[in-house]
Picture 1 (cartoon, rainbow, N blue to C red):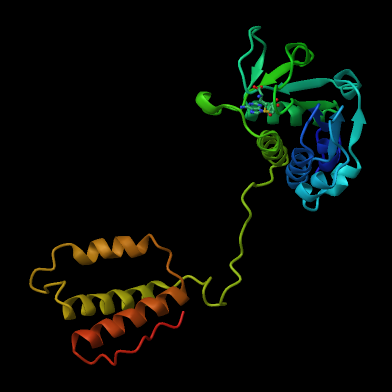
Picture 2: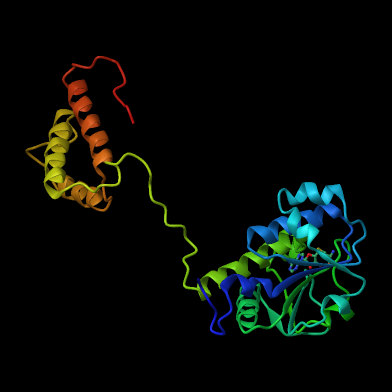
Length: 271
Ligand code: SAH
């Protein structure tokens, strides 16, 4: 089990991060937020005076993340939503008149994870669909986070904005555990497919290739130039597997037959 420096379980780190939605009008957006959170391993949703919740539309948009909706805490004020928080980051699509310490989404993800791993309670605060957060609400936040969208069209859908930050939190959380973000894919194809070819198989391939290039008159044996060296360099970079080699050899065999006019006119590809 992965633990933070303080000995917190990795999943407990994410439990210390809450998403706070202020005065949301559309229940569908609340559902979309629940889904975005669950995808990224976040579970604590706090709704400040939602206009229409609970709602079947929220459940529909949550598509399977209704446990997050069921567990959502509903409060009347932002102040109540932030009780016990040590770090509050508020999001805004627009520049505000009073300059405030700013984070980009990546910095926000890293700060959230670092603090949460120390046992701090972290809040990510999102505003109303039609008007965002008020200046007063933003001034309750330690940092402002702006997603660097196109200034001509800067406002993201609420659930999309939550998705961006939740993703950054997850990336920082994975990095803190030295867990790769890339899934290691074991190709469960043909047994043969994963196996690299041997150098001698490559050599037989090169002579077969040369033979076919001569047959189709692409290579002039009297003037070979650097063609074969260049093709060796190309295929040498490709980490050809045994299955791929069978395909290449099949193509060459058919190419030679075609050049000699022996073609049957039937596809041999069986891949
Ligand atoms: N019309 C509002 C935008 C509201 S979008 C305004 O002008 O402020 C709803 C919420 O999504 C915002 O309050 C904010 O929390 C989040 N959001 C949307 N776009 C964002 C962006 N580019 N950066 C940060 N947060 C954003």
